[in-house]
Length: 441
Image 1 (cartoon, helix red, strand yellow):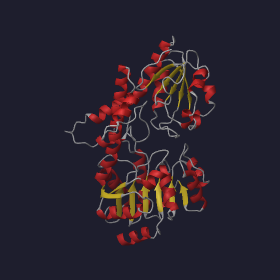
Image 2 (tube, one colour; image 1 turned 45 degrees about the horizontal axis):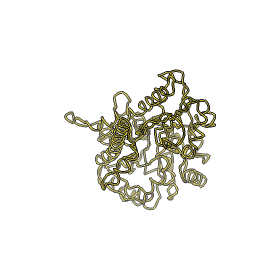
Image 3 (cartoon, rainbow, N blue to C red; image 1 turned 45 degrees about the vertical axis):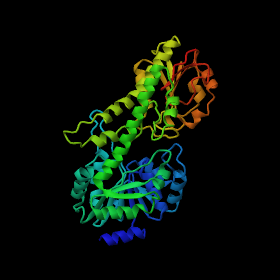
């Protein structure tokens, strides 16, 4: 059975099914189709299914090559999409790429989508099938949830009839295809045979190094790498807050710190968003032993979650210097995606900022060139506002003339910069920025 499946994968004779056509699943499906596999995509959103069937990309922002590749593989008939799980029956390689959030209140994994996908998939599995979970998982989830759920739903046995593996994604909006092809990947099987089969499969689409291991190690690796980044950003944010208080410029401090060997101070900013960094640290800790007490990771989460609220405080302070109260002030927020040049608004720091400003009584308008609900004339949004807040480093904002921005705002103009898009002295304005000395007219 193993050799038959290995040969089918090697010869690209088995269809590959991908469950979830989002930021992870859609690029994966396109790459396997491009590599010569017949690919079946499963997506519960009928609107998204309709778009993909027309060869139209449902993911916005700047995603080099994705829209073109999608149109190509759909036109060639290499990628078909449906909402019916029954269409996966011919596939002997199935990838699962659904969301794995955490509960906002408890920080516990919320595996509704994953459990639903596993239960819907099970009845359509055949003996001798490889199932790979690309979704990020808390350590122990493959053994504690994925395996028993699939075995119960399918009546098949892992290691005998099914081969289960975890190959956590490493994609980033704006670099979906590039990361998929060039980033190294960790593949952890529930058995050595599953690891070997998954390695055989991913060699067709990944040029980066493939590291085989066990499922638990793969789960820990992915959640650890994102927790590490979250901690590093929190450190940079804490230094930024210190610099603000001392009247120093964190951006110059960072530049000089990083000239020292083995130092890599991250960029500070107005908050951490996206599907991964705000929740993966909590996934890492979800199944920790009772006698393990995390200190650094929760502290980093608290720092990063506080940054949009700090931006709101900067708005209040700047308005005070301008002789205005935040209640009734009109504030324009530039950028609603969590990342530059993307349309991805998941866990956007801008959402937390907008919510806080409205709680304080401000009238808030939003502009984002990539998010459909907030597109429009930037200058019209800026005109007459008491403050402008830059939350995302979109290329469109980097090209703006700061003097023109200041001219559109109500006098005296107030610019609050959460991403150092503008230099503090770039225009004649009241300037507040993350990690920057205050500038008053």
